[in-house]
Every structure is written in C-alpha cells, then in structure tokens.
Length: 261
Image 1 (cartoon, one colour):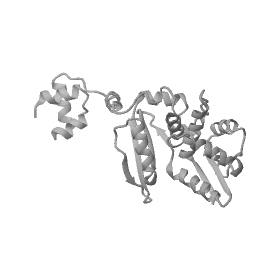
Image 2 (cartoon, one colour):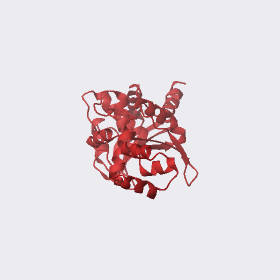
Image 3 (cartoon, one colour):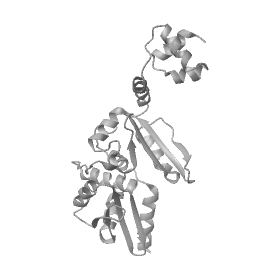
Image 4 (cartoon, rainbow, N blue to C red):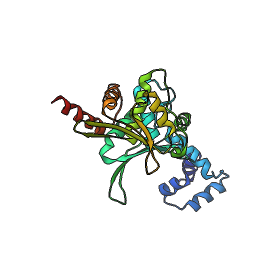
C-alpha cells in the first residue's frame, strides 16, 4: 500500500469507508495514518457535503431553475405527488412499481441523471424501481414550489406559470403521481388526492370548479371530475405532448377508442 496515495485520495474527497474497502485495512488504521501525517479527519457532515457535491456532478443541476417546458412542469408535478426529498442530504428520490419503470428511464434521460435505476422487492413481494439523484441546487429550487422533506404535511400550492400549458402539465404530473382514472362503459373519472387541501383547492379553482372536492373517510382530500368535464380535461392534458405515465394514458385511450366504435 502506498501511504501517500491513500492520503492524496482522502484529501481529494475519498471517505475513510471507501479507502478502507479499497486498501483492505480497517478504518481505525486509516485514521491513524491520517493523524500521524497531520491530516484533518473530516466529520460525517463534512464528508457528506463533499460526497453530495461529487454526486451532484452527474445530473443537470439547473433543470428546475427556469420552468419553460412542459416536461419540466410535468416532472415538478410528479415530484410534488410521488417524490421525496431527504432532510439531511441533497438527495431526491422516486420509487415506483416496476411496471412504471419506463417513466423513470425517461426522467433519467430528461434530467441527465447518471445514476442507475435500482430494482428491489418489498417484504410483501412487490417489485419496485427506484431512481435517486443528488443536487443541492435542485433541492433549493424544489423548495420554492413547496416540494420539501416531509412535504405530505406541508402547505403546497399550484404554480401558475405565465404559459397556461405549463400549469396543465404540472397537473398532469401530479395526476400521474397521485391520481387515478376510472372507466366503465360511458363513465370516465379523473381523480387526484392529497393529505392537505391547499393544492387541490388551487387546481379546483384553476379548472373553473369542475367536479367535486371533498375529504374522504380516510382523511384524504380528493378532487374528482366525472365524464362531462373529465374527457375534455384529459384531451387537454394529453395534447401537451409532455412526459406522461403510459399506463394511465393507455387507459384513457381505451375509453376514447371504445366511444368511437
């Protein structure tokens, strides 16, 4: 083992845990080597800051800095519904059923994320796909829209962009993350839900108070829009040509096709 190489790698940001694995020696011995060479031993917070900065280089940090495309607005809505931000780190996460892995692949490409999409199985036997990336700049920009750690319990509002299509794209993103489409013969329902009412109230007003907004027996707020108003809404949302969840889009196409027969 070349001690000077080890010291140089630590100075350049390598963690003690990484160096321990690489050089097959204990963390204790590495600390002793560093101390004997008068190298400051970083605290965990200091090391996390360096590690986060290194990982942040593998993503488009400025992606949310200026929302001007429907894809940006859609992803903002999708994260508002289905993403989570870690409190003590700059990590942003999305975890979906494996059947929706395709949209994670598109997000990965859209935001220029180098990290791999990981797959796992839950204790209940469900297959899950997860995409995580690190960006302090994105974390700060998302906070501007109310997308923060523990956002479930925070007040969040509908972004009203100068271009109305961007607001519709945000709604589609939120629907893809935390909404459902129900179809049955002549019936087609658009539904989104949330733990807090503010965002759904804003959407309700933006859509000219179409449908109904209520709190269900489980304490969730639901905005439900039935056939007469849901069909033109779906047509508008999918005319944007933004990112979208294929599974829900195909369900709407199924309804639309059956009406033409």
